[in-house]
Length: 233
Length: 293
Image (cartoon, rainbow over all chains, first blue to last red; front, side, top):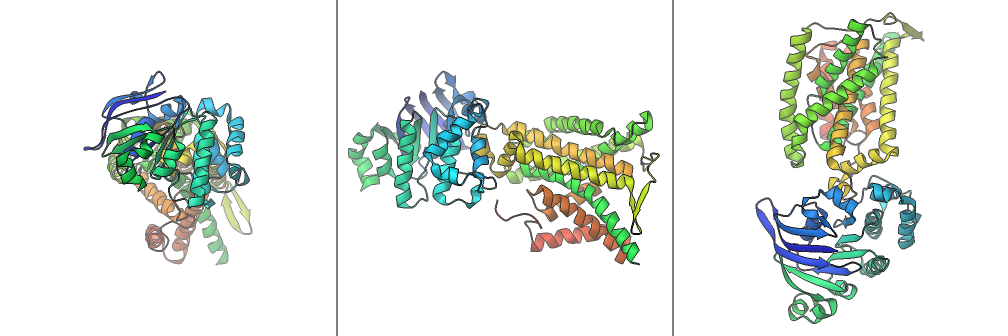
């Protein structure tokens, strides 16, 4: 469904991705792991259109994403959750979710999507009229993911959904992600929590210094020597 | 003695509502786009002249021609956005403020001189058959025209508030204010949101200008003064609070007229700027703003 070929990306004059190629198939849960500053977030930003690639190809179904603007890419069915969630703190939980269904395609089925999101995150329904800025860290992350689901994405990009959460909440969060994936949403997950990510994902890519350093099924990678020593030891 | 003070306060509130209206426009644009449009006062001046000429040439009542002034400023705003401001969308926040300041000052000079060239330096004002009408209550005079202007300013601000709170587009604007990247990821076209908020800001200036031309007076050099007042009020009220900004306008109006009463009208402008500095020192988030971003 998503094919990335030889992507180079730059922040100003600084190159941060070198020839990244990867693929995500329909229904998969793929993890992107690697150390800080390796280019995981940059890869997500290139896919969602927040950062335009210097060269290379990104195809999503029949569309060439390299030329599309970020808001059009949402319409095509890709939704990104930024690191830390970046919810709209001055608005109510419900308003945040409504904004998630901003694109025309999603707005038509807003009420059904809302039911779906409340079913996955019942906590959000309890807090729907509360100002989002008053939510706890875990609830904020739920809201950020819920908001992304409101756009009815075919591919969900998650950037560090476990960041800053208490260990017990992390486990819960990963279960939620698994559930979302089971319900038919393809997920590309960026995680620092490598062990948990590999348990969850079908496949994973290891990214180091802006290059793909390894790939395989999650099981393969758990036993992959460099991954073991670098992240799981 | 008391009557004179009360009268002064009333005049302060009446003019303050227009300060508030003008500042709400400036604040809306700044909040969404981070463009500090110092030609805002010139937009206001153009609104005033639109109203003045429609009245003088075709005898159109200034309150009736208000929609025309709005449309004129919407178009003018869109033209200057496409021509100048829209080019600065991709800059960082600090660069945007610096660049729009430069562009705004240039635009302000151009518009001022165009107005001078075409409409002379004369001070103009609209005098209708009801211009002198006054409503007196407890010995205090309420000029009907200024009272109506305040009412319109109030309605405009409430309408804006409802638009921002209730409509999808309004929520998209607020989302963009909070975090434009997250808003983009909702599928919101930021460029359109920027354009919309810019032309809305221009239209609000247009309404304020039209109201100034009927209750007060206009001239080609009035713009900078109104930009300055709007800026003071924007900081006073606090960014992001429409109601706070409007109330801030009334506070400035009252402060000015109290200064005129207790000290001298000469210090009217000075006190506004002193207020500005005091707020920046002691309450930089503004009287009604919150610290949280």
